[in-house]
Each structure stands twice: as C-alpha cells, then as structure tokens.
Length: 492
Image 1 (cartoon, one colour):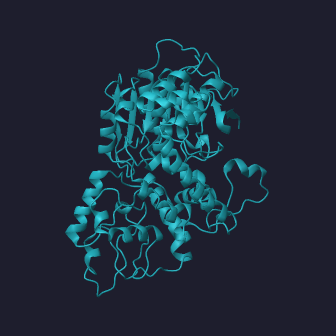
Image 2 (cartoon, rainbow, N blue to C red; image 1 turned 90 degrees about the vertical axis):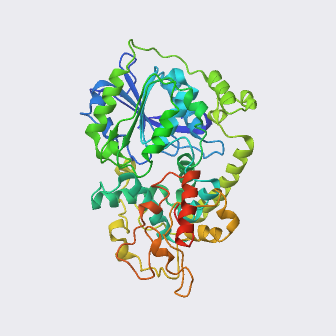
C-alpha cells in the first residue's frame, strides 16, 4: 500500500483504484473521484463503492485517502488539529499526486466534516461534494461533557466502561443491521483500534466528531459547489432535523440534494450499498464538469487568507502556508487547552501500555495478517459478554462516566446552565436505596433500571451520546424531563 509523506510528518495511506484494475497510478486523462475513507473501514475495500463491480469504480479512477488517525495513516497528534487541518492534508495530497479538481466522496460524520472544510478553504480543488451522514455544524456536547470520555474510553476504570462506550457507538452506527458475528467483529475492531493504548488517536477522532469544529454558517455559506447530503432514514447518530439545519446554510450552493434511504442506519453506504451507490452515481453524473480539468496547484495562500477572514484571526496570515496546522480554526488559547488535554491523554496511553491488553483488543489489522505467523484471537466477544463478565449490582454501582454526571447534577447551579458535564455513555438511573425520596423516580425515566438484575445489560440508545446530537435545546429538554420525574435527568 503506497504512502504520501506530507508536511508535519503526516504519512498518508492512499490507493489509486482504476476501473480496469490497471496500474495504481493517477491517469490525468480519466475522470477522478477522491474518496475520504471513514475510520470504521479497516481497508479501502471495506467501502462497497470502492469495490470492482461498483458503478463508481467503473466510471472513475478512485483516489482513496485515509485522513489522520484513520486506517494506516500515521501522524503526531497536535493541539491545532481540526477538520481544516485535515483538509489541508488533503490539499497537500492533491499537490503530491497532481490531482485535477475533483468530486469528493466522504461517507461518515468525520470524513464529511473534513470534506466540507476542504470545500471551504480550497474551493478550486472541489467540483462537488457527495456526503453521507453529515453531523451538523455544531458540537454534540460541551468541552466539559467531552472530558467524561476520559473515564469511559481513554482511561476506563473497568473494561466494562469501554465495552459500553464502544457498544453504544456501534449500535448508533448500524442499528440492528448486523448479524451477531458481524457485530462481534466490529466490536473487536473498535477495541483493537480504540483501546486505551491508542488513546491519543481516539482522542483526535472524538474531538472531530463531538466538539464544535467551526463549521460556522459563514463557512458553510461560502460553499458554491453542488452538494449531496445523503442520509439513512433510521440514522440514530444524526437526527434528520440536524441535517436540515445544516443544509439550510448552503444557500450559495448551485444544488443541494438531501435524499433519504428509508429504514437505513447511519452507515447506510455499507448496509444499503446498491441504493447508496445509485444515488451517488446519479448525482455525480448530473454535476460532472463539461470538460476535462487539468491539475492546478492548490492555492495555499488563498486558503490562509480565508482562514484569517472566516475565524476573525488576522494573525493567521503570519502562519507558514507550508504547514497544515496553519489552517486551523483554533486560537492560540484554544490550542493551549487542547495541548494540556493531549499531555493528560498521553499519560493514560503510556500507563496502559504497561498494563495487560484489554480483553477483546487482541488481533492484528488486515494489512498485518500476511506478516504475522500466529494471529491471536479475541478473548472477549460482545455476544458473549454476559457469560464472561460477572453481574454488576446496579443498586450500588454505576459506571465511572455516570458518576461524573451524577455528582455534578447535585449542584443546582450546574442544572441552571447548558454547560454542565455530560457523559457519552450513561446508565439510566443513579444508585439509590429504597429509603431514598426518589427511589421510584427511575421508573419514570426512559430506559431506567431497577435494582433487580435485568436480562439485557445493553444501554438504551436514548441514553447514548453516540445516538443523539446534543445542543442547547436538548439540554433544556433534559432538565425539563428531570423536573417532571422528580430526579436528575440522565440523558446525555
């Protein structure tokens, strides 16, 4: 698999896929489609639209790129990183491969945000955007809420906390579309790639997914290219009203299409590949350039000027346009805060490398299998988790992530604002005894559990921050629900 050595020590994995399975080099005479491969795809071929037989593969030479912290791409986690920095990486890849202006296919919430940032900063490189599962222009939680991922993902006190977190993520992406073995494989992949030994890269991905990433109305309004924002009708990660608000900002685009695939989950490009591919192919054909486009160098100076203007930061003009971090939307003060987070997460990662590997994270990535004599099999599988993990007394304990929220909610001042910490994965009711005045309040909370052991230890999707986008209105709704049932609201 070839790599591009890009500025800031980014080693980007890429592949050129020709319609006839020919030589893996860019042919300037053929129509080109640039694809940003999502983090849930171990290899490029795990995206159905990349495979031989797909209409996209038949009609385009596909240049598949893995952004930072995706697939085999390696990079140093830096405090300035945001979608605009990853977009600059893509622009440097355009320069290295001498790619002409091209349509961008970006399935998934993180890849989609990077593609949008590319169209904002480097509009001359993008002829159209084909996006799936866009996650809106606002963060899904506060900075304080994001930090609760320390206890449930980056530095879990118990493996069960990580299992719950990744299990809810997987369910919000696929709903119930996967059979048992496939879901087990997905969970083991997520555990292998996002266990605490890889906390820094998990942190980098989660920041792009859950925090405000400055896809502002002004930035979105600058996009003039045609946009396809395809969405699964049963997407439990991003609500349809979020997609509607997002696409409403694209009023300068020459065309905005928002088809919905009925019954499909967030990862509709894998569960409904034929329908997804047909919609993308039709969109790209209708918005194809009328003549072949030649390579033109990316306008890094112009992109730096847009960075300074969009984010009201004239000091950005003094940055080095040869470095992708120069295009970050973060201020120096914001980057300092992230730098402190990185230092903390790096400490977790170092400590976990000296500890036994979490069960279920065993194994190797697909590209390592050929050079591995014996591939270890996972000792933990999601479908057998209740057989392998001792029962938890829910009357006396909650997850670490939940304890952070529960302790905060007892502060009435925190309840009065939208800035209170929130957990991405929480059980539905705080620990209580029968003598507590709110002992029965949990029964009125959706998905609440009683002290008795139930048959299913899975969390309700309604309680998962991976299933619902969070904004101020959602926070207010939670507080109103809390007041109605006489206890703290424990939705994310």
